[in-house]
Structures are given as structure tokens and as C-alpha cells.
Length: 149
Image 1 (cartoon, one colour):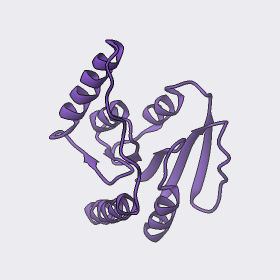
Image 2 (cartoon, helix red, strand yellow):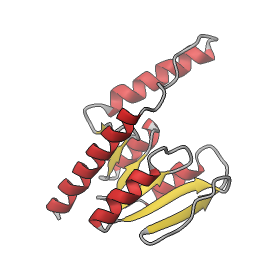
Image 3 (cartoon, one colour):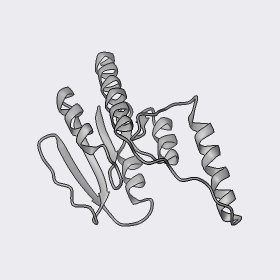
Image 4 (cartoon, one colour):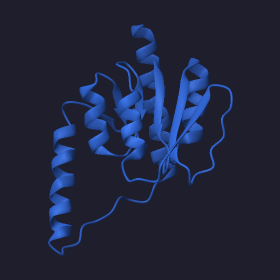
């Protein structure tokens, strides 16, 4: 098991590093060349082009069943689930078969509204509570997966 992170705008990279170290799990941070991330023990950094989907494509192409992916992108999460891996958001939402279709549909509906000139709400401001929820859910997921293997 490895943890792959859609790292460009990820606000919980430090929490991921701390938790992964506890479980001795490799973390792969995938980001564009615009971001200054450094490798350290247990942390691999992969730089990709600035293209909108470059990090997502790298993650999908290098993902293995049983890996964990941290992303806020529902499309990437759906692909992760299709490859029998695990996905969760930076706010601690675990993506699964029960919620991914709803999330993709909501994203599609919002995009249609915006294309038609309408306005939709963006994401809420990231809070300390979001950070704590992520840490709790991420640690539990790693624990549960380690128990499985």
C-alpha cells in the first residue's frame, strides 16, 4: 500500500506525512513544477507538467489496487475506485460506491449552470475542524487497511 497525493492544492500534506510515517507507508506527492516540494524519508515527489489533468493522469497510470489517494477531484476519485484503490478528500470524505455518483452528478450540474451564465457556490473555507476530520479518517483508513494485510 502507498499513499498518492494530488498535491498541488492539498492543505493536509503535513498530516499525511505524519500519519504515513506512523504506518511506515510510502507517500508520493504529485504536483506541477510550480510547487516547491521536497523529498524526505518516506516521501517521494513527482513533478508533472502544468496541464490541468497532468497530476490526475500520473496518479491513475501509476496507481495499484489497495493504494490510497488523497484528492478533492471527484473524477479522479471515481477512477481510483474503479482500480480497486481507496480515495478520500482533504476534508476526510471517504469516496465510495455509495457517494461517488451523487458527487459526480452534482459537479456536472454545477458546471452546466456555470456554462449557462449562472453562478454556483465554491467550496467552503478550509477549517481546523476539516483538518482534524481528515487526520482522524486518514489514520483510521490506514489502520483498517494495515489490519487487512
